Image 1 (cartoon, rainbow, N blue to C red):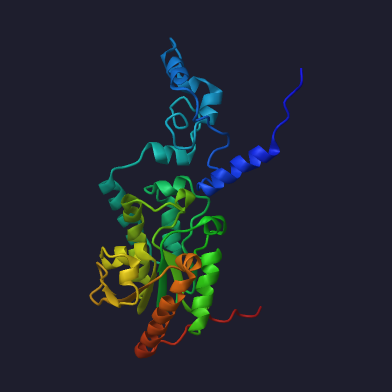
Image 2 (cartoon, rainbow, N blue to C red):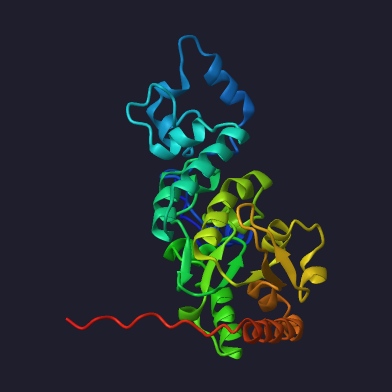
Length: 305
């Protein structure tokens, strides 16, 4: 009998298809056969005295956060599995997020609070927390949407191709990362870079509001429709919002903060013709900096030992 040799070309083609479909991160130690016939699954469940968790291979194959992975028969279910299996209600999640955010007295406290927070399901599938980059002492804050694949790997916002585009945009008006504070609306990457759900945005929003409260920026640059619509409480798309100054009203601040929506750098990579509009927005932001008397803030030099 002739043994079948693996078709490497077909395997690579299947892998590329998965990557193109957005499945570019592994979230389980073992693959899960999602093409198994329903009859076979039903027969397993209906077998006398059988329990799905009693089969070690089935428990290992279950994706993190599934009922099998977090079943009581598992001796040490993972923290991620426990978090996904015990998702609180929306009101409880909001209360927990507000409690943790308000207890934070610095950006690093917010990082510690987010490490403790279990109310956002994205945490279970992300590799790293992406909180901020840049200078916490800067008076200009850039707020994006959500981390991508490279941001998830490095644990910083705007470090992939979109981040390189942002660096060029800042350089065009004489700025760099040491002179601005960069963060996102969400702090964990949505799988496959999908759009986050309203519940995921609501879970992360108290931590962004706390950052704004602690850092007291004078100007906000909102990149992308998601951050602009959320913070400005608007329903229009980014192509209508961009270039129009608006006031961001913080729930615990008396004075509004001027905010300028603009196109996300990732969108500019896909639509280079829109760079002209983004350039107009950057010029408007530079003019606002001049009106506000904002000088770029350089980090303090390191003390020599």
